[in-house]
Length: 85
Image (cartoon, rainbow, N blue to C red; front, side, top):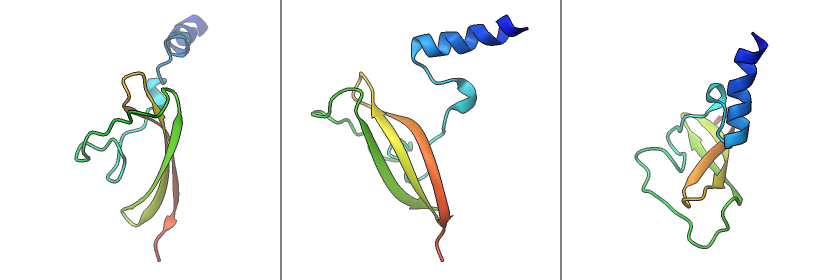
């Protein structure tokens, strides 16, 4: 049983892909949300991190992105803050 769980986890770590159970879906306001224009950073180094703060559905969010090898944003984390009064 341990081997059945360990193999996919190790494969995800070795390949550098996030584990499927922890992947984040974009929400309105995210830089990678489908209705946003496609953005690529041309001068930022590959692997660099950036944060984006926005409001959606009455909450404030802060997202962290990494610039991938194809110069597109990869969503790493999202923090949700209290609602707007």
